[in-house]
Image 1 (tube, rainbow, N blue to C red):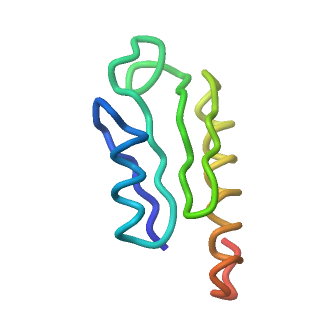
Image 2 (cartoon, helix red, strand yellow):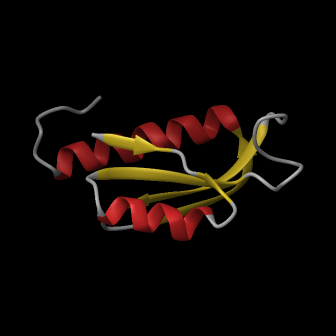
Length: 85
C-alpha cells in the first residue's frame, strides 16, 4: 500500500501522475500556503486514489490524519488485501 505526500508546486497534478504508476493513494498539499503545512496546525489537502479525489479545505491536521487513514482503509478493502488498518 503506497501512501505518498508529494511536496510540489502543482501537487494534485503531480499526485495523479505518480498514482497512475503505483497502487494506493496520494495526499497532495500546496507547500506555498502560509496558513497550511509545516509551520501550521492546519493543512489543506487533496486525497487522490485510483477511483476518487477528496479535496479537504483548511482543517486541523488531526482531522486530516483521520480522513487519510479512512481513505487508506477503503483502498486496502477495495484491493481485497484483507487488511483494514
